[in-house]
Length: 457
Ligand code: HEM
Image 1 (cartoon, protein in one colour):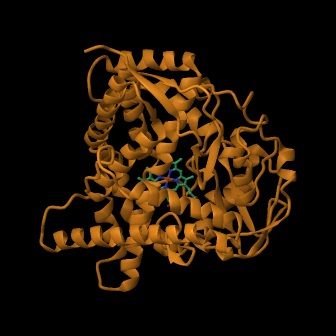
Image 2: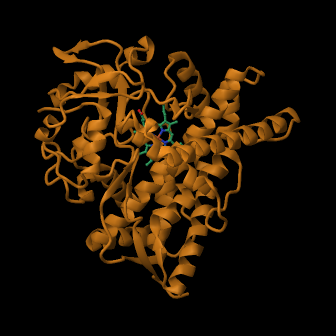
Image 3: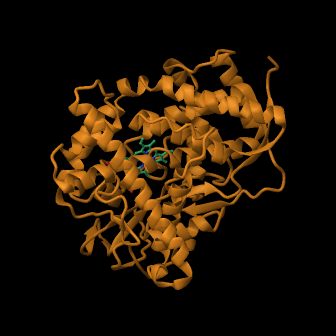
């Protein structure tokens, strides 16, 4: 009946200590003081809170107080002096600006709108199937992480910004730029002095250039869309249109910056975590043939030999939902959410100083909450199983929880269903199953597989 939370770096460190069972004591070792993103020193804490009376969770993550009083901050704005996510939806602190953006963005995530994206999800996933078919014919080793990353980036490019990236067939600077900025974030979070070490100069230059590339691309795509709107063209009601609406359409440079902040935010948040979830999922299925077999049976039953996955099929793929949820239990690809608190507060008799991190990654690996926690077992998410309240929240909780949850899981289901329907995959022996922490978590090996066709046409 206890819960643990502390500062961001603690969990990042735990995440680096790959695949360890996390005991409460492990947190004790990290008690101390660390700099947070804004450079203020905050105390690492481990606090015990009753799981069924989770006052701290409710107060900080979920209560209206959090959104109204502006007391609890998230803080990533710049990266090595370059404006990065700024006041985009994930990082914006000002309540009124957040509320306005979130409300305007909502329609692009409504179930009606998401239904309309099924065609694009299918079409882009189909391009991956074509690629895998070639790889199967050539019997080459492939990195599933790399391939699914191309698909999720293609999807966000198309559905959010109306742009054809076709990364499975064309080279592009975006995948490396996103990798560099995420790596930059984690290096900065772990060591505030990273920036001042001459040894890191080349990397920092790369990160700054990556920030600039993402932001100039954003500015260009936003301007093109604004022109189309001004010319009365019929533009999609996609994320880009909502970004323009949410920032206002004046010439105010502040508005311009916020639009670009949101472009970068959605370009990154909209694909990276999903690609990592998909590749961890493939990795675990490769290690658990029994789970894979059961999943195959469900997919064959629901889809048969038909090519596209429709919206109703998603509801019938219940075991696939369980597998995806279990993947995020062991591998919360966005492992933690952090809040800076300007002054010490007391909640339910608990003294909370500085900053707080809530980590689904950590609690999902605790024996206290999950029996045999390192075992990959999708039965934990059987519809009749008890719900893991407050110890499993890979999309965070409360008003600032993930706006893209349904988007991400619909997309993930389409890709996984097609993949398993068509192909057998085997993990290349000897590869590592370690996790790398590049701000988000991803599989170190890239999930190397050999692919075979399941059915000969
Ligand atoms: C916020 C996880 C996919 C858009 C968050 C947060 C988490 C999360 C933990 C809270 C971050 C924080 O409090 O600091 C995930 C995971 C995903 C995923 C695990 C995939 C497996 C997506 C996608 C989109 C998206 C596909 C958009 C297309 C957002 C946005 C927020 C957010 C806009 C900020 C919400 C707000 O503050 O109001 N996500 N996400 N996410 N996510 Fe996701």
